[in-house]
Image 1 (tube, rainbow, N blue to C red):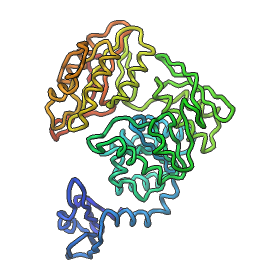
Image 2: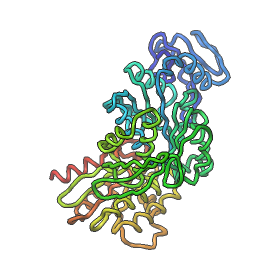
Image 3: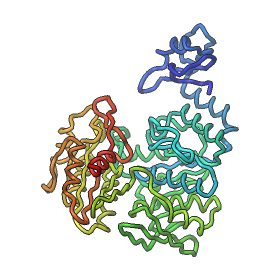
Image 4: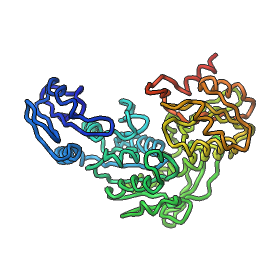
Length: 447
């Protein structure tokens, strides 16, 4: 692509667009871009020794230009956007796998990377910046994809990362407390996510969410346990599978899946509806649901002796509650939970997450989880300061905490390692340090 917003990526003949963003002003790097070969610069002020276009807002210019220049290419894709506090990755990744399984080639853009069939690369953000996003969409077209399913975060929506992109379908999973360090209020959080549904042709909405009214905007389909277009009922959960029915019109269809828990039934119902809406019959969808595997780091189960270790990305109060309620359904003995909270993020949820862990686990180990620029012990003190139970200990070093948790396991126990899931790093200060919960577990087992 000839447009660049990072001067370091500029090559001869490129057009450099100087964006003013929260993390820096591109105008400071115009000379670097020119030295690297930019033939033209788009700026909000100043004149330079190459062709210079001065515009009122460079971000708006980039959005409108990309939309006009690439609309014919992008229109070849059916674009599916999924938003919500929890469930985005599982819903998107499962949908991507199912569509590919039936020969409808589909790209995936989200938290665990960029995929077309197999993984192509990691991404810096759940939803990439607008220029990177267009490049990924064009890559999908060039690789003969018919569909793209992507996670759309509230940050991306509020920062206009998807402006100018028309979504064929927008899916809403749920809205619970998260990112209030950024959005400040739940209403602001909901309004940010609402943007996606104002720019989509058709919506699929969780009717059970208390925030549903923000998303019931136009041409929508509903799902949930309450009365809805696709009504979920008759769920049966155990440690090997989840069973549930969906009633559509007057037909009741039974589904069996390896994905565990009520929250995953919600996620899969989104997939089922989308597949049915594009013309896949329920018999085929039943087969797809039965065979689908969860994405990496989402209820990832490791058998250890006669116990189970489960790694999951749960890092919000609702997600922690969901996974603990799920394992309570099939637990035969003790549940141990290893959990921490991220630094430089919403402090109010720390105590909530710790309380849920202590209430629903037999024992908790509180540890480090991406402390960023905060002191690790200070974060944990925020977690424990209002607890009325003492069924926990503090082990700041996450590797030590995981190993200590594994050492506790007896027959039929379950160890939950929450918060990081697929992530293979810890963020300490401003540095990403390699760290993988799964690697720690597997190394311990091998020893």
